[in-house]
Amino acid sequence: MPDIVVIHSSVADQADASRLADALIGEKLVACVQITAAATSVYCWQGSTEHDTEWLLNIKTTTAACPRVVAWLEKNHPYETPEIIWSVYHATAAYADWASEAVA
Image (tube, rainbow, N blue to C red; front, side, top):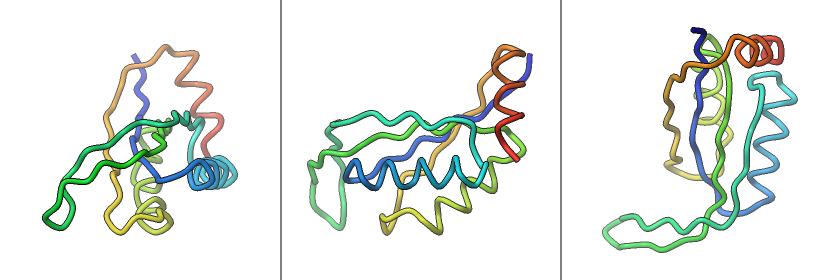
């Protein structure tokens, strides 16, 4: 079975989520970005427990493009220390082919 990578990240608002998604698609780094709204994140930051509403990004790309996407996110993400985590998933041949064709 072919593989794809799903990278997870989050941002503070819909505008940042859309900006990142549009740029990643526009630069042909990814095949798809799913944006999920209004999740509550609870986390420790600089010694305090924070509760924030965030927009979640599920970023789908090829295994070959993953390092480029991670580097791009590290450079362009609005957070000082962004969540950038990823996993490799098995995909149907048709989906993996579509993703490969979408990513330059």
